[in-house]
Length: 200
Image (cartoon, rainbow, N blue to C red; front, side):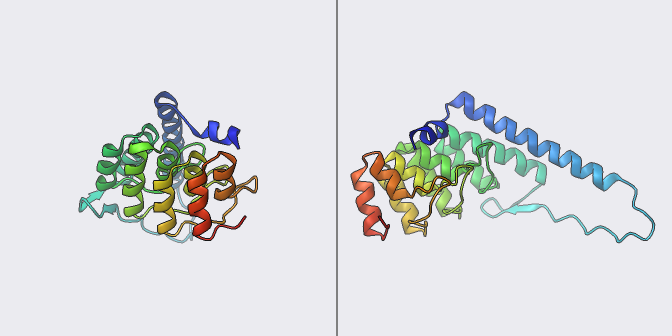
């Protein structure tokens, strides 16, 4: 459990590197898709469906192209990893993808739950209010509630529970949020999880 927690915490430099690696993968995928579309179609082949219309950022009310959304999303993941709550809010309003993931498979909400503290709490509230999936899992099978519980962040844990986080979900190692809290000595978080129905 300690190993997983250590792996999950990244400094600003590592955050940037992870995010840049992620966007490089996305860009490669866009190029491959463009190359496939550019290939001549065999005679008699069905016409390809029309491309989806550009996404609209609800808060900003403006059209966001796929390329722009990709850039905004890269910035969102980096800002979340660095604990920059004000930038996270601006990027959400601009149309960044809430559910995008970095290389370890973490969403911005998972990063906020991992960081904790004042900035993590602010980010978590913004992301949840914007509709982030509270039950998404990362490459370890961990949810945002599991990360918050391991780090003993009562405020984020309560916020996630209030918005439908699965209290009894298990990660890839079979650990629940309650086990993460108790094994790290976070008695208040464990107490709140039990009160919400967490199983021993």
